[in-house]
Amino acid sequence: MRLLLQQRPDGREAPRFVQLMLQPDLLGGWTLVRETGQIGGRSSVRREQFMDRDSAFAALEHARDQQLKRGFQLMFAQGAEAPSE
Image (cartoon, rainbow, N blue to C red; front, side, top):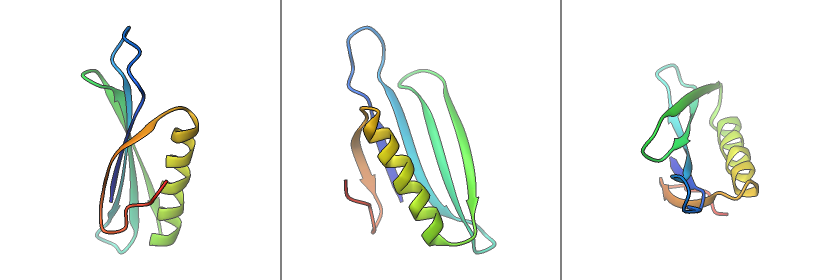
């Protein structure tokens, strides 16, 4: 599953983005990958490990909701179970 959120451009600098990806790992757990940065610029990546899909999905939804409160907009959602706003 993959979500891309982006701030509205304000004309002064490139908009910021947040990409959230939920991926199964090789040991039966799940990884939440968060990439944040400025479009066309530097970005940073953080990974969180979870033992089960439900807790990973809850963390993804929580991260998405936090970014929506900060003014980001959902630009792209990919995956069979893409969460709704």
